[in-house]
Image 1 (cartoon, rainbow, N blue to C red):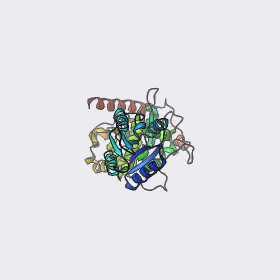
Image 2: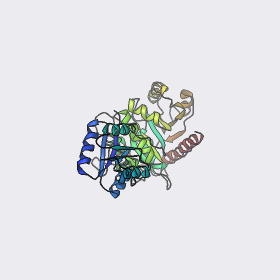
Image 3: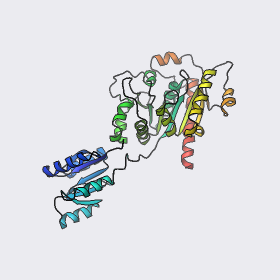
Image 4: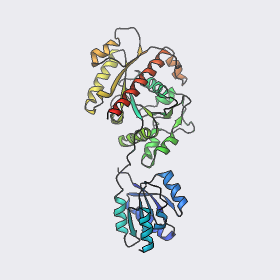
Length: 364
């Protein structure tokens, strides 16, 4: 579904305002997000709501903050109105109601779908092809490792079938200020990077969290989830995506949109086989060159980290040693101490992945 063009109306006369409002609403392609009858209200509405377009009386057009486009609307054409519109640099001038079709033609010129969001974040997707490999463990610790005085980090649980991130972080259902990804997907076309930031739950470890959709939520739409990721990437410096097991459409879309993918493996035959099958299914998505293999819970056994290179053609980028305290800590919603061996290994992985994505961006 195409996104409606979001419009602010700045018209003082109530009867004209109502006529224009109803006319735009009937189009089905326009959503009036605010009305204003003074310069201060215009500035507040544009600053807070970031509309696609402002339709304003000529005398108000000069108050519209740039670079938001403005269409002037007047009850009659006059030299004074034209001069005011020209001075304000409007994108069009219409007379109401005689030129209502012309007004709609102007509005349709801005109906280009969701506005492009400039990505400032490095987006890292954490994926596992088999349950129990440690996707949640790696994602949560990777988010903490990426936090620094200069970097803001958001962890988004885009797993359409789970909610393990909230459990691992000790975030209870109904916690104040908690917004699941499904809630954001419902309003994603009306959100801005600023409103996304306000929706992020702040975890005491220093990173923000968007938890998974609850079981009763409707199936997530691929387009909406990707748009949420875009908003996250426009509002933070690092975004960590906790993806679902396997290769469902939402997970594949998240892997495609990520700058880097951490594929988590356990040292057992079942994990290796599941990963081989998953990578074969997403081979056409073009994520292979951006994928790093992470071995979790490494211990002595018949399958060793060197087997990763033998099976997948490249050595693992990180080998996380087995830490028997992890299940107990996760049961209590706590992360490993930063000085633990596995936590330090993830911190090194974080540094490498962020440096790699920065290098790729620089080359681009």
